[in-house]
Length: 394
Image 1 (cartoon, rainbow, N blue to C red):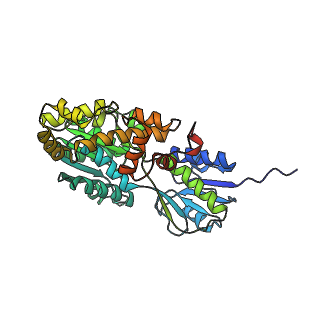
Image 2: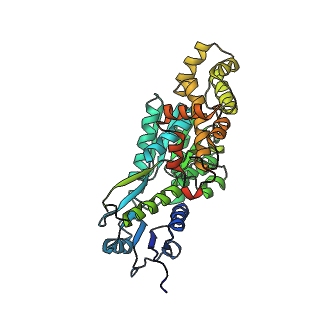
Image 3: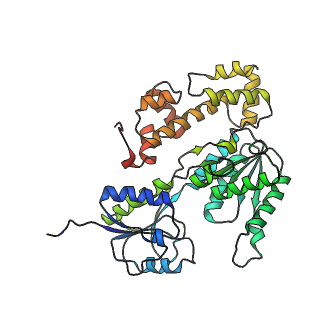
């Protein structure tokens, strides 16, 4: 008796990203695929592989063997990276605009006047993140600096980064920039470069330099000398959506080049940005009160009373220093908490509303519609891997 038909899928990543693997595996289990991810472990391209579809991630033109396999494949391909020269694929990519905006919004809420972006390249990913970060910062009238190490690589034909040279350059730059300053790095690894450079020359984190990375990588974010605030780029969900899209292609959906963007999973706050950098004591006091009590039934009036200054005085100072009104900061904190709980799954909307300081499910829904342009349920469906759901309500 023949076993039931199962699709055979190749997971061919130029480098191993555990969260991609995890998301793809979640969907593969649901779809009863036979999943071949051996390349993710041994790095060898399976030249004679035969199957039904491929999920890939190509670094650049140097991945010649992988590109050759993809170019010769006669099956649908879903690409988790930007590079797609010489082969046709649909792509699942991070929403880098929203990643840059999220980092900027978080740092702006800390009250800094000076901001920088640290990068080692001008790749599409990096420039999308930096440009969105810069736009958001400059829209508030704050100062922006591009900390670009790329020109230092021009004398090396292989574009290699010498760690000692990089840290020496970065330390010198960080000593020169106006302080306090908040810095976004292109990834978590580069954010830890900033941490190491600061510590090497006695610059205090986060009091003089606050740092935020991208990806929420557990190694970089939690095991460095200072725990790192990071924008979760939602790589697990990207892997799941890539597998989901491939299944649709295999079911007959038209195979064309198209790109789907995956929204970030929020900012995970740790020591590297745990500060209020506002020099104005009334605004600083108001911010701390909001952050410490947003889950409670507090209002703008409570914030004003706690600050010790008049309504008009705090309104003007707060918007000038933070970049948005008191009510928006209070709502921003509440909705970020609600989003976190929605992404995790397993909670009723009423519970999420109460835990976020939004009283009830009706107010949660109205606030989501107003500030996020969608319902809480729509947000959850877009950002939660279905197989991870538990006790979800319709």
